[in-house]
Length: 628
Image (cartoon, helix red, strand yellow):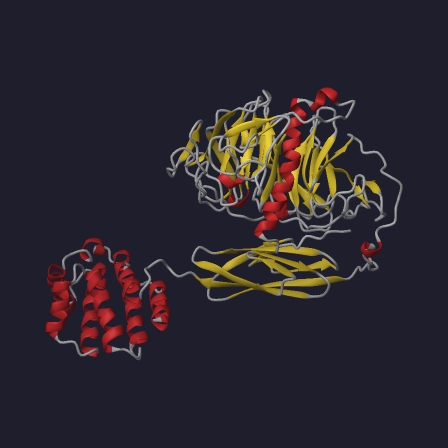
């Protein structure tokens, strides 16, 4: 059966299930390092031990079991955040001394155990005492805090972990769209990805970090779900939603990415080094479809657990496609096959050498390849031999009908609309700029949006499927896609009054001397305003003080238009603590007391906008007034 992923619409539980599947092979790989290599010729695997809380007798403590192991009703061991306690161990790696490192996703931390299975330490934000900072714990631990800080893991937790030859620890921080690096001792070293220091491009942070900006640029990540290192310390990332493999140097510099269309959007295998884009998912030779597991062998070759394609892909250290293997990957037949030049998506199932959603991959020193395949581990030799005899696919899973080749090209046009601004990028598209391109029939184009600083993304239309900021389009005819952006509402408070007060404070930014004026007590400020008014009347006032007079003029207009007496204005001056508060108080009277229907509000708000020179807060106030 061919299992097709619902691109862009998988649920959170599905994402966590994929990581759980990958952890199966990771745990096995750790055992391989400790004992299986000595018996590679026999290909026998023996259980040694398991460790976690309650695994021996159900006690609420860290334990090790070797022959008889227990599990609670929900999971193996007792879940939680204690020292050595796990809560979603989604990946594991070992170092040269045999120490074991666990991506403890549900605890938002990395746990380290000795080769003998003793708990050493855990690190992440708040793991020791709950403080909002990076911490290490050795005896008393708790679940970490989520976020984007330096050494802090995202809400989905660390997705994958790898160790380089020097002992440094690399973590695929999936929802933070970055790679985190820690020393062998557990200190945070750096993180890299786009915007991790607040900029717009590829960056590295070492002390002050933030959530990365997801996307498909050179070194930019979109759900990094797997990480591995090679003997030279280079780092490889299974960039799941970019449908490609990204390579970084040991120092954290982007080297290259490879997959279909990653350079110019062409429907072929490509490598990019400086200008990159989202890959085209599919089953071609070297084409990836949601890669979530990655590893390297002693020669530097890269192996990928190609989840939706139901196969394992192998690439050279230089990034060239070597082969893929699984059922039907060469000609669609119901048997184990290897392809090198012409490939297709494999058949999912339970046959010998057949995958059912491969999620993790590891290698040993002899070159054998181990795959986390749902509920089992599959082992392949370094050069997979032909599989079992061909068998017909089950009657209810016959191969799909393949349409005849279609050499027709169609046009994809992208338009931007709404009250805000932003951009859309993807395979052959960079709009504004390049908003129109032609593609061969059957091409799948992935688009991502990026709102400008003062806008938010409001939605797609015209896509084949969507997932928040992602739009997938299958080209079978001329297509048009629209991305809508709305103007961002500034954080000026939650009520009309609060927002108008916020707008009043903007006066400081347009009056050269106004920074202290708006904070003066109203009576003092009124006297000053009257002086400025006198200067204004004789045309001797400094131009920089015009906004101060405009404030006075505005207040007078408010008074006369709404029937306020001089005494009422004076009382408001006495009650108010600052000019900003006064403006908000008067505006409140307009909205709630003297203009309940809102008949004059828009006109007054326009005058206010002219005064402060900032239209955003007034727009928000208008919208808020309508809600109130």
